[in-house]
Image (cartoon, rainbow, N blue to C red; front, side, top):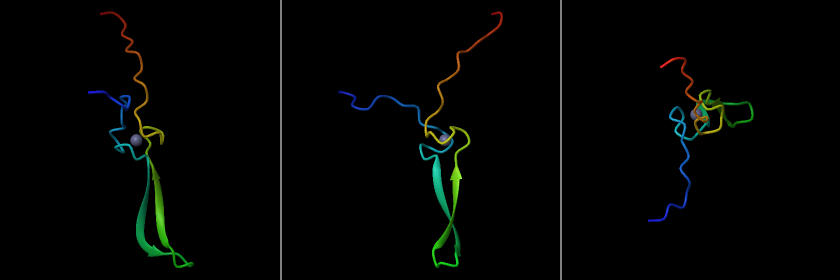
Length: 60
Ligand SMILES: [Zn+2]
């Protein structure tokens, strides 16, 4: 079974959706829905987990 997509670690914090617009339920003066844009701080809005740092251990 060929794997078309390379394995990419999806951010477990935002599940791959680093930027989400949350509707507040209120409307702006323009009549538009007021939304709050939330950015995932865990993956720095990349949607993927940052490459794991090399496990540096001092000693055994
Ligand atoms: Zn994330």
